[in-house]
Length: 274
Image 1 (cartoon, rainbow, N blue to C red):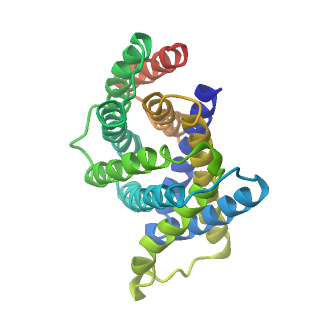
Image 2: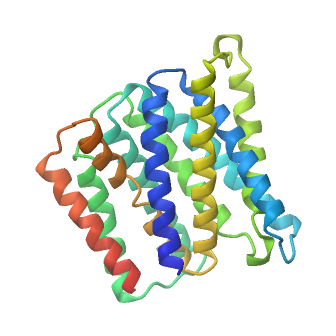
């Protein structure tokens, strides 16, 4: 069940990144990110109220808030990178470094001990995502943004994974509050006024709600699966924007990216079995 939840999180995040990337090319990325976090806050609070928690401790909320700081930072830089860079490069680059940092911390600091098959899946994942990126980490204006976003991704996953299983969805809600507060100073600047057409506002809010749903699925997965494995499975999301770009935007895919997608599929099988 944990593996299925983590994969579901990856699918949701892949769709959100694709939609958010397209939206960030039409309106300012700060508006997309800030309104998105407000949408995520609404969904997370509704979910936390509807799904009762056994016991919510202050530490759970603090871990959730730290996760939200990572989320807000990651989404701001990711959307800025997507607004001016190649989607098939920015998204995978953010995931490659993020998953590597998360797995290293999970093993070295938190004491995760994946089995041999799972280790093989982890070993396949990083080069697979690199291939999905086209092997062009130095290309495109958004690459640096993707690398900075990866640090936020690592903080997001590691911190949220520390929340207790009895805390329900309150850590996710606390994270959305923290993300909104982190983004508020930039969103409030006169040059970044959130004056968007109503349709764009709704789209931005929906992308944020989708991202919050992805985090909820990841939190449930991390409570049922080794953190390192849950992070790796959830981090397979870059494959989906590449596929959607190929099908819907008629983007061309290289042989190296094809190999990367196949590698991501193999890693999924290995991590699920492991």
